[in-house]
Amino acid sequence: MATNNSDGTLNKVNVLMVGTGEYTTGYVGGTAADSDKGAGVVALTMFDLRRRATVDRVGMCGVNGKKFPGIRQHMENQIGNVYKDMDLTCDTFPEDTEVNPKAYEKAIKSFHPGDVAVIFTPDDTHYDIALECIQHGMHVMVTKPIVQGLAHHRALCEAAKKKNVLVAMEVHKRLDPFYADARDRARATSATGLGDFQYLYAYMSQPKHQLDTFKAWAGKSSDISYYLNSHHVDWSEWTLAGKARPIRVTATASTGVAQGRGIETEDSITLTVQWENFKAPSKSLGCAVYTTSWVAPKSDVHSQQRFFYMGSRGEINVDQAHRGCTVATDASGFASVNPLFMKYTPSDHKTFAGQDSYGYKSFEKFINACRSINAAQSQPSAYNDGSLATVHTTMQGTAILEAGRLSLDADGQPMDIIYADPDAEEPMSIAPHSFQTSDSKGNSTSGKKKRRLSH
Image (cartoon, rainbow, N blue to C red):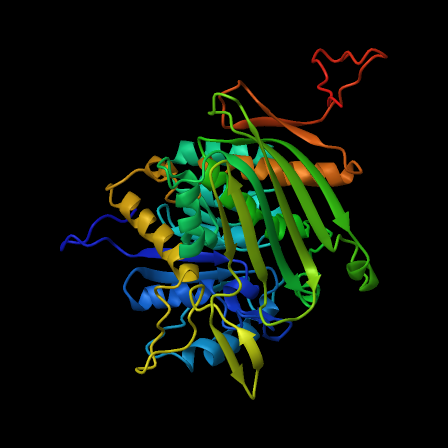
Protein backbone atom coordinates (compact mmCIF):
# COMPACT_ATOMS: atom_id res chain seq x y z
CA MET A 1 0.00 0.00 0.00
CA ALA A 2 1.29 3.44 -0.94
CA THR A 3 2.37 5.96 1.68
CA ASN A 4 3.81 9.49 1.47
CA ASN A 5 6.59 10.55 -0.87
CA SER A 6 9.80 11.82 0.71
CA ASP A 7 8.75 15.42 0.00
CA GLY A 8 5.52 14.96 1.96
CA THR A 9 3.22 14.77 -1.05
CA LEU A 10 0.79 11.90 -1.36
CA ASN A 11 1.71 8.95 -3.56
CA LYS A 12 -0.13 8.32 -6.80
CA VAL A 13 -2.68 5.52 -6.97
CA ASN A 14 -3.35 2.94 -9.65
CA VAL A 15 -6.89 2.89 -11.03
CA LEU A 16 -8.90 0.06 -12.58
CA MET A 17 -11.94 1.18 -14.54
CA VAL A 18 -14.52 -1.61 -14.77
CA GLY A 19 -16.95 -0.96 -17.61
CA THR A 20 -16.30 0.36 -21.11
CA GLY A 21 -19.58 2.12 -21.93
CA GLU A 22 -20.75 5.67 -22.52
CA TYR A 23 -19.81 7.22 -19.18
CA THR A 24 -16.36 5.61 -19.11
CA THR A 25 -15.27 6.00 -22.74
CA GLY A 26 -18.02 7.77 -24.69
CA TYR A 27 -17.94 4.84 -27.12
CA VAL A 28 -21.36 3.41 -28.03
CA GLY A 29 -22.29 1.19 -30.95
CA GLY A 30 -18.92 1.57 -32.65
CA THR A 31 -18.81 5.38 -32.54
CA ALA A 32 -18.93 8.41 -30.25
CA ALA A 33 -22.09 8.52 -28.12
CA ASP A 34 -24.91 10.70 -29.43
CA SER A 35 -25.10 12.59 -26.16
CA ASP A 36 -23.20 15.22 -24.20
CA LYS A 37 -20.55 12.59 -23.30
CA GLY A 38 -19.00 11.69 -26.65
CA ALA A 39 -15.51 11.86 -25.12
CA GLY A 40 -16.60 9.96 -22.01
CA VAL A 41 -16.01 11.07 -18.43
CA VAL A 42 -14.20 8.42 -16.38
CA ALA A 43 -11.30 7.58 -18.71
CA LEU A 44 -10.76 11.21 -19.69
CA THR A 45 -10.62 12.18 -16.02
CA MET A 46 -8.18 9.39 -15.13
CA PHE A 47 -5.84 10.25 -18.00
CA ASP A 48 -5.84 13.91 -16.91
CA LEU A 49 -5.27 12.95 -13.27
CA ARG A 50 -2.27 10.96 -14.48
CA ARG A 51 -1.03 14.07 -16.34
CA ARG A 52 -1.37 15.91 -13.02
CA ALA A 53 0.63 13.24 -11.11
CA THR A 54 -2.32 11.94 -9.07
CA VAL A 55 -2.89 8.63 -10.88
CA ASP A 56 -0.23 6.22 -12.14
CA ARG A 57 -1.22 2.96 -13.80
CA VAL A 58 -4.63 2.89 -15.53
CA GLY A 59 -6.52 -0.28 -16.43
CA MET A 60 -9.84 -0.86 -18.15
CA CYS A 61 -11.97 -3.99 -17.97
CA GLY A 62 -15.01 -4.96 -20.01
CA VAL A 63 -16.70 -8.13 -21.18
CA ASN A 64 -16.04 -8.08 -24.92
CA GLY A 65 -12.35 -7.61 -25.68
CA LYS A 66 -13.15 -7.33 -29.39
CA LYS A 67 -14.33 -3.77 -28.71
CA PHE A 68 -10.96 -2.56 -27.49
CA PRO A 69 -9.36 -1.74 -30.87
CA GLY A 70 -12.32 0.53 -31.58
CA ILE A 71 -12.23 2.02 -28.09
CA ARG A 72 -8.51 2.80 -28.37
CA GLN A 73 -9.03 4.55 -31.70
CA HIS A 74 -12.01 6.42 -30.30
CA MET A 75 -10.00 7.64 -27.30
CA GLU A 76 -7.19 8.70 -29.60
CA ASN A 77 -9.67 10.71 -31.70
CA GLN A 78 -11.61 12.21 -28.80
CA ILE A 79 -8.81 12.68 -26.26
CA GLY A 80 -5.31 12.17 -27.66
CA ASN A 81 -5.88 14.33 -30.75
CA VAL A 82 -7.78 17.01 -28.84
CA TYR A 83 -5.78 17.57 -25.65
CA LYS A 84 -2.06 18.07 -25.21
CA ASP A 85 0.16 15.78 -23.11
CA MET A 86 -2.42 13.03 -22.56
CA ASP A 87 -0.86 9.59 -22.04
CA LEU A 88 -3.54 7.10 -23.08
CA THR A 89 -1.59 4.01 -22.02
CA CYS A 90 -4.12 1.61 -20.56
CA ASP A 91 -3.99 -2.10 -19.69
CA THR A 92 -7.15 -3.76 -20.99
CA PHE A 93 -9.04 -6.89 -19.93
CA PRO A 94 -9.95 -9.33 -21.46
CA GLU A 95 -7.67 -9.86 -24.45
CA ASP A 96 -8.77 -8.28 -27.74
CA THR A 97 -9.87 -11.66 -29.08
CA GLU A 98 -11.73 -12.78 -25.96
CA VAL A 99 -15.26 -12.40 -24.59
CA ASN A 100 -15.33 -13.04 -20.83
CA PRO A 101 -17.97 -11.76 -18.35
CA LYS A 102 -15.59 -12.67 -15.51
CA ALA A 103 -12.61 -10.77 -16.91
CA TYR A 104 -12.76 -8.46 -13.90
CA GLU A 105 -11.40 -11.27 -11.70
CA LYS A 106 -8.08 -11.37 -13.59
CA ALA A 107 -8.00 -7.59 -13.85
CA ILE A 108 -8.44 -7.15 -10.10
CA LYS A 109 -5.66 -9.63 -9.34
CA SER A 110 -3.25 -7.49 -11.38
CA PHE A 111 -3.81 -4.58 -8.96
CA HIS A 112 -2.84 -4.24 -5.31
CA PRO A 113 -4.42 -3.36 -1.96
CA GLY A 114 -4.80 0.41 -1.74
CA ASP A 115 -5.41 0.75 -5.48
CA VAL A 116 -8.73 2.15 -6.70
CA ALA A 117 -11.54 0.51 -8.67
CA VAL A 118 -14.14 2.62 -10.47
CA ILE A 119 -17.16 0.54 -11.50
CA PHE A 120 -19.53 1.67 -14.27
CA THR A 121 -21.32 -1.49 -15.37
CA PRO A 122 -24.97 -2.67 -15.53
CA ASP A 123 -26.67 -2.34 -12.14
CA ASP A 124 -27.07 -6.06 -11.47
CA THR A 125 -23.29 -6.60 -11.73
CA HIS A 126 -22.26 -3.95 -9.19
CA TYR A 127 -22.39 -6.16 -6.12
CA ASP A 128 -20.26 -9.05 -7.38
CA ILE A 129 -17.59 -6.80 -8.87
CA ALA A 130 -17.46 -4.41 -5.91
CA LEU A 131 -17.24 -7.27 -3.41
CA GLU A 132 -14.37 -8.85 -5.36
CA CYS A 133 -12.51 -5.53 -5.34
CA ILE A 134 -13.12 -4.97 -1.63
CA GLN A 135 -11.93 -8.46 -0.70
CA HIS A 136 -8.75 -7.71 -2.67
CA GLY A 137 -8.20 -4.62 -0.48
CA MET A 138 -9.06 -2.02 -3.12
CA HIS A 139 -10.94 1.20 -2.52
CA VAL A 140 -14.11 1.20 -4.62
CA MET A 141 -16.29 3.82 -6.27
CA VAL A 142 -19.49 2.47 -7.87
CA THR A 143 -21.86 4.36 -10.11
CA LYS A 144 -25.39 4.87 -8.80
CA PRO A 145 -27.24 2.84 -7.71
CA ILE A 146 -24.46 1.25 -5.68
CA VAL A 147 -26.53 -1.97 -5.52
CA GLN A 148 -30.17 -2.86 -6.13
CA GLY A 149 -31.18 -4.21 -2.71
CA LEU A 150 -30.70 -3.76 1.02
CA ALA A 151 -29.19 -7.22 1.57
CA HIS A 152 -26.36 -6.56 -0.87
CA HIS A 153 -25.88 -3.04 0.48
CA ARG A 154 -25.50 -4.35 4.01
CA ALA A 155 -23.03 -7.00 2.83
CA LEU A 156 -20.84 -4.38 1.16
CA CYS A 157 -20.89 -2.31 4.35
CA GLU A 158 -19.61 -5.25 6.36
CA ALA A 159 -16.95 -6.15 3.78
CA ALA A 160 -15.71 -2.54 3.63
CA LYS A 161 -15.43 -2.37 7.43
CA LYS A 162 -13.58 -5.66 7.58
CA LYS A 163 -11.03 -4.60 4.97
CA ASN A 164 -10.91 -0.98 6.17
CA VAL A 165 -11.31 0.38 2.65
CA LEU A 166 -13.27 3.33 1.30
CA VAL A 167 -16.39 2.37 -0.67
CA ALA A 168 -18.61 5.08 -2.13
CA MET A 169 -21.26 5.75 -4.74
CA GLU A 170 -20.52 8.11 -7.61
CA VAL A 171 -23.27 10.75 -7.47
CA HIS A 172 -21.80 13.90 -9.00
CA LYS A 173 -24.94 15.95 -8.26
CA ARG A 174 -23.50 16.41 -4.76
CA LEU A 175 -20.70 18.46 -6.35
CA ASP A 176 -23.07 20.57 -8.46
CA PRO A 177 -22.96 24.02 -6.79
CA PHE A 178 -26.69 24.55 -7.39
CA TYR A 179 -27.64 21.25 -5.74
CA ALA A 180 -25.12 21.72 -2.93
CA ASP A 181 -26.45 25.19 -2.14
CA ALA A 182 -30.05 23.92 -2.19
CA ARG A 183 -29.06 21.20 0.26
CA ASP A 184 -27.39 23.66 2.62
CA ARG A 185 -30.40 25.99 2.51
CA ALA A 186 -32.75 23.10 3.26
CA ARG A 187 -30.64 22.04 6.26
CA ALA A 188 -29.98 25.51 7.68
CA THR A 189 -31.34 25.97 11.19
CA SER A 190 -31.29 29.78 11.03
CA ALA A 191 -34.29 31.94 10.16
CA THR A 192 -33.30 31.72 6.51
CA GLY A 193 -33.51 27.92 6.52
CA LEU A 194 -36.39 26.07 4.89
CA GLY A 195 -37.62 24.23 7.99
CA ASP A 196 -38.94 20.68 8.23
CA PHE A 197 -39.42 18.79 4.98
CA GLN A 198 -42.87 19.10 3.42
CA TYR A 199 -42.81 18.31 -0.30
CA LEU A 200 -40.47 17.59 -3.22
CA TYR A 201 -41.12 17.02 -6.90
CA ALA A 202 -38.13 15.86 -8.95
CA TYR A 203 -37.98 15.06 -12.66
CA MET A 204 -35.19 13.64 -14.78
CA SER A 205 -35.32 12.33 -18.34
CA GLN A 206 -33.23 11.27 -21.29
CA PRO A 207 -34.17 10.99 -24.99
CA LYS A 208 -35.53 7.84 -26.64
CA HIS A 209 -32.26 6.90 -28.32
CA GLN A 210 -30.86 6.06 -24.88
CA LEU A 211 -33.00 2.92 -25.06
CA ASP A 212 -30.70 1.81 -27.87
CA THR A 213 -27.62 2.75 -25.82
CA PHE A 214 -28.82 0.62 -22.90
CA LYS A 215 -30.68 -2.11 -24.78
CA ALA A 216 -28.31 -4.78 -23.42
CA TRP A 217 -29.76 -4.35 -19.92
CA ALA A 218 -32.84 -2.09 -20.08
CA GLY A 219 -35.77 -4.02 -18.63
CA LYS A 220 -33.66 -7.15 -18.21
CA SER A 221 -31.53 -6.36 -15.18
CA SER A 222 -32.56 -2.82 -14.24
CA ASP A 223 -34.98 0.00 -15.01
CA ILE A 224 -35.16 3.76 -15.50
CA SER A 225 -35.86 4.39 -11.80
CA TYR A 226 -32.67 2.68 -10.65
CA TYR A 227 -30.78 4.49 -13.43
CA LEU A 228 -32.04 8.07 -12.99
CA ASN A 229 -34.27 8.39 -9.90
CA SER A 230 -31.16 7.41 -7.96
CA HIS A 231 -29.82 10.96 -8.45
CA HIS A 232 -32.64 12.86 -6.75
CA VAL A 233 -33.25 10.09 -4.22
CA ASP A 234 -29.62 10.46 -3.16
CA TRP A 235 -29.98 14.25 -2.97
CA SER A 236 -32.93 13.75 -0.62
CA GLU A 237 -31.07 11.28 1.59
CA TRP A 238 -28.02 13.58 1.71
CA THR A 239 -30.18 16.64 2.44
CA LEU A 240 -32.42 15.05 5.06
CA ALA A 241 -29.74 13.00 6.85
CA GLY A 242 -30.40 13.10 10.59
CA LYS A 243 -33.66 15.01 10.04
CA ALA A 244 -36.08 12.79 8.11
CA ARG A 245 -36.27 9.20 6.91
CA PRO A 246 -38.29 7.44 4.18
CA ILE A 247 -41.03 5.17 5.53
CA ARG A 248 -43.23 4.21 2.57
CA VAL A 249 -42.88 3.93 -1.22
CA THR A 250 -45.55 3.57 -3.90
CA ALA A 251 -44.58 3.22 -7.56
CA THR A 252 -46.46 3.75 -10.81
CA ALA A 253 -45.30 3.56 -14.41
CA SER A 254 -46.12 4.39 -18.03
CA THR A 255 -45.45 1.98 -20.89
CA GLY A 256 -45.67 1.62 -24.65
CA VAL A 257 -42.74 3.38 -26.32
CA ALA A 258 -40.01 0.95 -25.24
CA GLN A 259 -42.27 -2.02 -25.95
CA GLY A 260 -42.78 -0.65 -29.44
CA ARG A 261 -39.02 -0.93 -29.89
CA GLY A 262 -39.02 -4.52 -28.68
CA ILE A 263 -37.73 -3.66 -25.19
CA GLU A 264 -39.87 -4.94 -22.32
CA THR A 265 -39.46 -2.16 -19.81
CA GLU A 266 -41.28 0.83 -18.38
CA ASP A 267 -41.01 4.14 -20.24
CA SER A 268 -41.35 6.29 -17.12
CA ILE A 269 -41.45 5.45 -13.42
CA THR A 270 -42.77 7.60 -10.59
CA LEU A 271 -41.96 6.89 -6.95
CA THR A 272 -44.13 8.55 -4.31
CA VAL A 273 -42.22 8.44 -1.04
CA GLN A 274 -43.54 9.28 2.42
CA TRP A 275 -40.85 10.82 4.60
CA GLU A 276 -41.09 11.19 8.36
CA ASN A 277 -39.45 14.16 10.09
CA PHE A 278 -38.46 11.76 12.85
CA LYS A 279 -36.34 14.31 14.75
CA ALA A 280 -39.17 16.85 14.88
CA PRO A 281 -41.28 16.75 18.08
CA SER A 282 -44.43 16.39 15.97
CA LYS A 283 -43.05 13.52 13.86
CA SER A 284 -44.59 15.38 10.92
CA LEU A 285 -44.73 13.85 7.45
CA GLY A 286 -43.42 14.99 4.07
CA CYS A 287 -44.05 13.68 0.55
CA ALA A 288 -41.56 13.35 -2.30
CA VAL A 289 -42.42 12.48 -5.91
CA TYR A 290 -39.55 11.27 -8.10
CA THR A 291 -40.24 10.79 -11.83
CA THR A 292 -37.81 9.55 -14.47
CA SER A 293 -38.16 8.71 -18.15
CA TRP A 294 -36.04 7.55 -21.06
CA VAL A 295 -38.60 8.20 -23.80
CA ALA A 296 -38.37 12.00 -23.93
CA PRO A 297 -38.01 13.74 -27.30
CA LYS A 298 -34.63 15.06 -28.32
CA SER A 299 -34.43 18.68 -27.21
CA ASP A 300 -31.99 21.44 -26.34
CA VAL A 301 -30.48 19.29 -23.56
CA HIS A 302 -29.55 15.64 -23.31
CA SER A 303 -31.17 15.30 -19.92
CA GLN A 304 -33.97 17.33 -18.35
CA GLN A 305 -33.17 17.63 -14.64
CA ARG A 306 -35.07 19.74 -12.12
CA PHE A 307 -36.71 19.72 -8.71
CA PHE A 308 -38.93 21.80 -6.45
CA TYR A 309 -38.40 21.51 -2.69
CA MET A 310 -40.69 22.95 -0.03
CA GLY A 311 -40.06 23.06 3.68
CA SER A 312 -42.23 24.34 6.51
CA ARG A 313 -40.59 27.80 6.21
CA GLY A 314 -39.59 28.15 2.56
CA GLU A 315 -39.05 26.62 -0.87
CA ILE A 316 -36.48 26.36 -3.63
CA ASN A 317 -36.54 25.56 -7.37
CA VAL A 318 -33.52 24.16 -9.22
CA ASP A 319 -33.34 23.62 -13.00
CA GLN A 320 -30.09 21.74 -13.52
CA ALA A 321 -30.56 21.48 -17.29
CA HIS A 322 -30.68 25.20 -18.04
CA ARG A 323 -27.84 27.30 -16.65
CA GLY A 324 -28.39 30.39 -18.80
CA CYS A 325 -25.86 29.27 -21.41
CA THR A 326 -26.91 28.37 -24.95
CA VAL A 327 -24.83 27.57 -28.02
CA ALA A 328 -25.86 27.42 -31.68
CA THR A 329 -23.62 26.19 -34.51
CA ASP A 330 -24.12 25.18 -38.13
CA ALA A 331 -22.79 21.73 -37.26
CA SER A 332 -24.85 20.97 -34.16
CA GLY A 333 -27.75 23.39 -34.10
CA PHE A 334 -29.09 24.92 -30.88
CA ALA A 335 -28.36 23.56 -27.41
CA SER A 336 -28.45 24.55 -23.77
CA VAL A 337 -25.07 23.55 -22.40
CA ASN A 338 -23.76 22.90 -18.91
CA PRO A 339 -19.98 23.33 -18.68
CA LEU A 340 -20.34 23.09 -14.91
CA PHE A 341 -20.71 19.30 -15.40
CA MET A 342 -17.89 18.67 -17.90
CA LYS A 343 -15.94 21.30 -19.81
CA TYR A 344 -14.69 19.57 -22.94
CA THR A 345 -13.46 22.66 -24.80
CA PRO A 346 -9.63 22.75 -24.48
CA SER A 347 -7.65 25.78 -23.31
CA ASP A 348 -5.64 28.04 -25.60
CA HIS A 349 -2.69 25.74 -24.92
CA LYS A 350 -4.73 22.72 -26.07
CA THR A 351 -4.76 21.19 -22.60
CA PHE A 352 -7.82 19.75 -20.92
CA ALA A 353 -9.41 22.53 -18.86
CA GLY A 354 -12.30 20.80 -17.12
CA GLN A 355 -10.76 20.26 -13.70
CA ASP A 356 -13.30 22.56 -12.03
CA SER A 357 -16.28 20.68 -13.48
CA TYR A 358 -18.27 18.69 -10.94
CA GLY A 359 -18.25 15.58 -13.14
CA TYR A 360 -14.44 15.63 -12.86
CA LYS A 361 -14.30 16.67 -9.20
CA SER A 362 -16.46 13.74 -8.17
CA PHE A 363 -13.65 11.33 -9.09
CA GLU A 364 -10.77 13.55 -8.01
CA LYS A 365 -12.25 13.99 -4.54
CA PHE A 366 -12.66 10.24 -4.08
CA ILE A 367 -9.17 9.44 -5.35
CA ASN A 368 -7.57 12.06 -3.10
CA ALA A 369 -9.46 10.55 -0.15
CA CYS A 370 -8.01 7.14 -1.05
CA ARG A 371 -4.52 8.62 -1.25
CA SER A 372 -4.98 10.16 2.19
CA ILE A 373 -6.13 6.82 3.63
CA ASN A 374 -3.19 5.01 2.04
CA ALA A 375 -0.84 7.53 3.65
CA ALA A 376 -2.48 6.94 7.07
CA GLN A 377 -3.59 10.56 7.18
CA SER A 378 -7.26 9.61 7.50
CA GLN A 379 -9.56 6.64 7.99
CA PRO A 380 -12.41 5.51 5.70
CA SER A 381 -14.90 6.31 8.48
CA ALA A 382 -13.89 9.99 8.29
CA TYR A 383 -15.85 10.32 5.04
CA ASN A 384 -19.17 9.22 6.56
CA ASP A 385 -19.79 12.90 7.36
CA GLY A 386 -21.55 13.56 4.05
CA SER A 387 -18.42 14.68 2.22
CA LEU A 388 -18.67 11.49 0.13
CA ALA A 389 -21.64 9.23 -0.59
CA THR A 390 -20.12 6.30 1.29
CA VAL A 391 -21.67 2.85 1.35
CA HIS A 392 -22.41 3.41 5.06
CA THR A 393 -24.48 6.56 4.48
CA THR A 394 -26.55 5.69 1.41
CA MET A 395 -28.70 2.78 2.60
CA GLN A 396 -31.96 4.73 2.61
CA GLY A 397 -31.58 5.43 -1.09
CA THR A 398 -31.15 1.74 -1.83
CA ALA A 399 -34.26 0.99 0.25
CA ILE A 400 -36.34 3.54 -1.69
CA LEU A 401 -35.26 2.20 -5.08
CA GLU A 402 -35.74 -1.45 -4.10
CA ALA A 403 -39.14 -0.68 -2.56
CA GLY A 404 -40.11 1.09 -5.77
CA ARG A 405 -39.29 -1.97 -7.84
CA LEU A 406 -41.15 -4.22 -5.42
CA SER A 407 -44.17 -1.91 -5.57
CA LEU A 408 -44.23 -1.99 -9.37
CA ASP A 409 -43.94 -5.77 -9.40
CA ALA A 410 -46.83 -5.96 -6.92
CA ASP A 411 -49.13 -3.87 -9.14
CA GLY A 412 -48.64 -0.67 -7.16
CA GLN A 413 -48.78 -2.13 -3.64
CA PRO A 414 -47.19 0.40 -1.23
CA MET A 415 -44.06 -0.85 0.51
CA ASP A 416 -43.07 0.09 4.05
CA ILE A 417 -39.43 0.67 4.96
CA ILE A 418 -38.83 -0.88 8.37
CA TYR A 419 -36.47 0.47 11.04
CA ALA A 420 -35.29 -1.07 14.30
CA ASP A 421 -36.64 1.78 16.46
CA PRO A 422 -38.31 5.21 16.18
CA ASP A 423 -34.99 7.07 16.06
CA ALA A 424 -33.08 4.73 13.73
CA GLU A 425 -31.81 6.00 10.37
CA GLU A 426 -30.61 2.71 8.91
CA PRO A 427 -33.41 0.72 7.25
CA MET A 428 -33.62 -2.93 8.24
CA SER A 429 -36.07 -4.38 5.71
CA ILE A 430 -38.98 -3.73 3.34
CA ALA A 431 -42.50 -5.10 3.77
CA PRO A 432 -45.81 -4.71 1.89
CA HIS A 433 -47.96 -2.06 3.53
CA SER A 434 -50.95 -3.33 5.48
CA PHE A 435 -53.92 -1.04 4.91
CA GLN A 436 -56.08 -0.09 7.87
CA THR A 437 -59.61 -1.44 7.92
CA SER A 438 -62.52 -0.25 10.04
CA ASP A 439 -65.81 -1.61 11.32
CA SER A 440 -69.23 -0.10 10.67
CA LYS A 441 -68.66 2.47 13.43
CA GLY A 442 -65.44 3.74 11.91
CA ASN A 443 -63.19 2.09 14.50
CA SER A 444 -59.88 0.80 13.20
CA THR A 445 -59.49 -2.95 13.38
CA SER A 446 -55.72 -2.75 12.90
CA GLY A 447 -55.01 -1.21 16.28
CA LYS A 448 -54.89 2.45 15.23
CA LYS A 449 -57.86 4.78 15.21
CA LYS A 450 -58.78 5.89 11.71
CA ARG A 451 -58.77 9.67 11.32
CA ARG A 452 -61.92 10.97 9.63
CA LEU A 453 -62.54 14.36 8.08
CA SER A 454 -65.33 16.38 9.72
CA HIS A 455 -67.97 17.95 7.53
